[in-house]
Length: 322
Image (cartoon, rainbow, N blue to C red; front, side, top):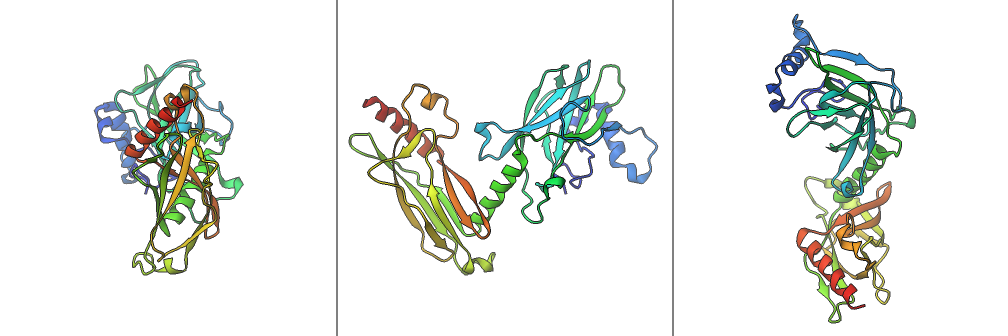
């Protein structure tokens, strides 16, 4: 079932309860929900555009993207562009992709959103659970967008359905990362410790990578006894780098049932320009190259709020040493 109450792939938008204050939209969408009961009330005007991955083929073009500060949330941007000559009001938008189990949905937090002609609007949308089995072939990756809009002078909203453009492969990449993270989490919990150990001269520090394999006899996952993962390497970030005299560990193989372990990571600032911290997005999120089962790639291990503040303070102090 989709997050809006409809099975993924139906293309019928179900509004959030707060949207029911919009009487026209409520009546129209209630009609869609009751269509199987053969009611005679009017439904939203629907337009099926010719499927295409090229933006600009319909009155509204939808393109998927992702900003750096959305990595690891997980979240993407739905970029909508009104390609018509008149403004329209957006009530709701969703994208259905075979890479995800439910629709990727957006709805305004307050008033509906006006889309002026030719002005792109980037809307954040959370990603639902990824589809990790039976992934589509490249020919079956097309994402379908459905939007609910109104225009001046219209008595009811229009539901438009057409293909969404994903020029940067955002959906496939996030699917890869989420499925890999799920496979890793089935074997062990990986996190960063909460305390930073700063050297007396403040030029280097130690952060601990904590790996806690699950018990081999975990009743919820009885197959874990035969599962293992390998941390092939640990990468730096735009803010943090490996201390040259103390290289980070590599090729660490852990199996379900192993005792929890902590790996000290000696760090130094990767950069000291004035914008290093002020403009930081992913500087406290360590990328780990891992292999588990038949999957391999990078997972991201973020610092918690306490450690993140300590890391920012360390970089500031260390850079002041000259």
